[in-house]
Length: 155
Image 1 (cartoon, one colour):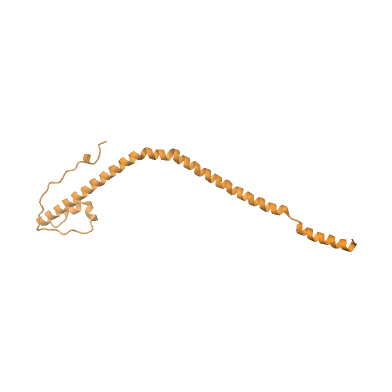
Image 2: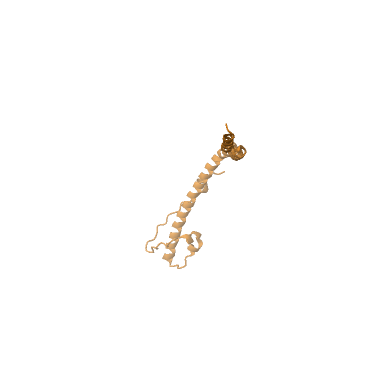
């Protein structure tokens, strides 16, 4: 081959060699950074999973048995609350009946000041006044006397 052809081939080889040159260090650096980032995220995820498992085990070992131990106490408390609500409802009915009887008695006797209304703290929460029936006298019924032992177990 001639020198001229050799020079062209060498120049052509240099040009094509620049295409074949790879800067692996920069590409690998980017690849390594990506791998390190993924590894950090995996470690964070693993620590979160371990925390959740620890909390779950604590719940299973401590809290659930405590709740199961307290179940009967909660049931007893619910029964006592229901009994108390029943007593309050009966007291409210009795108080309303007594208030109506007192109002009718006041109307019959011509007393204008509402003495019983001032003594009854629940009368402030009434929405409207019920009309009085002065012509109709209620028949006296002896009130039922309630005892707390009827509603609550003696402990």
